[in-house]
Amino acid sequence: MNIPFSPPDIGEDEINEVVDTLKSGWITTGPKTKRFEKLITNYCMSEKTVCLDSCTAALEMTLRILGVKTGDEVIVPAYTYTATASAVCHVGAKPVIIDCMPNSIQMDYERLPDLINERTKVIIPVDVAGVPCDYDKIFDAVLSKRGIFTSSSAMQDIYNRVVVLADGAHSFGAKRNFRTSGTLADFTAFSFHAVKNLTTGEGGAVTWKKHSDLDNDELYRQYMLLSLHGQSKDALTKNQLGAWEYDIIGPFYKCNMTDIMASIGIAQIKRYPAMLKRRKQLIEFYDRELSECSVSVLQHYSEKDKFSSSGHLYLVKLLWQDETYRNNIIKRMASYGVSTNVHYKPLPMLTAYQRMGYDIEDYPNAYNMYKNEITLPLYSTLTDEQAQYVVDCFKRCIKII
Image 1: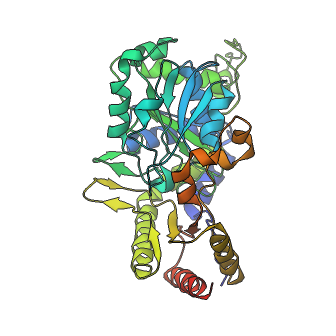
Image 2: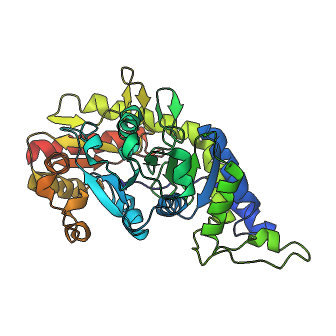
Image 3: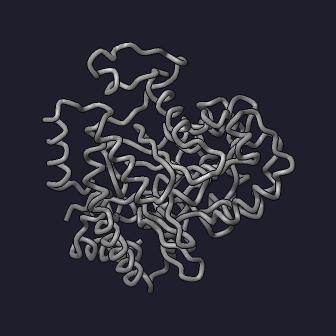
């Protein structure tokens, strides 16, 4: 067999929706994008949503709207993809990297208050693999340091504390404490990249939860300005008869979602409950099959802690093993036609962050989680037969090496 790692789940519904858009005569940001935004808002039960061309753009534009700038600090976890921290760098702020808890991929909540100071403006937790972070503990840390918060923008005045901006690139559809990802943090950025549970090819969105002092329509307008060169009218509005004239409010950015992308998302979100159900079935199968192996697997559901993940990634730790062993397993799996991956190489191991002065020696928990982690294929079109082949090959590999 040949088992890819994470192909997109695209069917006739997506194809038909895109064809409808292509025939409509309007393919850039327009009615389909606006419709997709409303569907996301309804699904998440949040206040309002803006669709953009990536999750990275959603993070960066939100930091800009919050007034984060040079001299400010933003706390990010060591165990994440670079996009979480690079968005901070894009606005000129300093990413302050926090280690994981022991034997966990989530940030060290106990240490979090110690990293919050007068320069801290935002915390970006990451819902790795679709497992939502413990936002109650994050907000407890934020509120414990509210007295030292220093505002430097109108948006920061509204919150009068450090803002929690979730990197929910993996967690569309996840829940904690009976609330859906999109309402757990102040703002949540989603990814709809090709490998994500719900895809638009490329793409992302930012949604936010209710705040009594937020003007949702004005906030939406600010995102539109930032994502469309600061233009006072979008292309659809300008296209109306006699409505060509516009202004440029500022020399801003270009990161809008198109209606072609949104068309895929509209079809995907209608199918999403069934896609999510299939992922959970596969996780239960993997959990049963690997229960007797010398591995530990990431927990995707906890009745005690009241969370359920979006089932984005299936992370496995090869107990008592090291990087060399893990890398050999990856090669062996490839020889059987099974594609695997690693999530993630911690930020302090990457050249860009080493140049900023970060050293993996200071992040032992993140390194210990990374060194023997392997991610197995998990996607909604994976068949029972293919899933059985994956676990059979995996068991064979860890017995041979």
